[in-house]
Image (cartoon, rainbow, N blue to C red; front, side, top):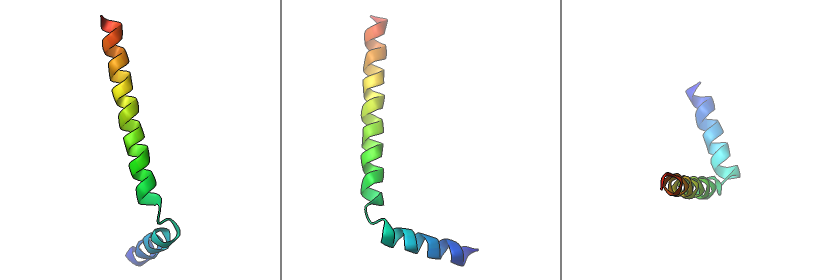
Length: 46
């Protein structure tokens, strides 16, 4: 089982060298959306 997972991650690592960058992109985008929603909530409370 461990061997299969290792092989899969190796294949994924070779086929998706951009996956780490895209993860970071989506993470930062989610953070920005979170900040926006926080701001809109604060504005609505006023």
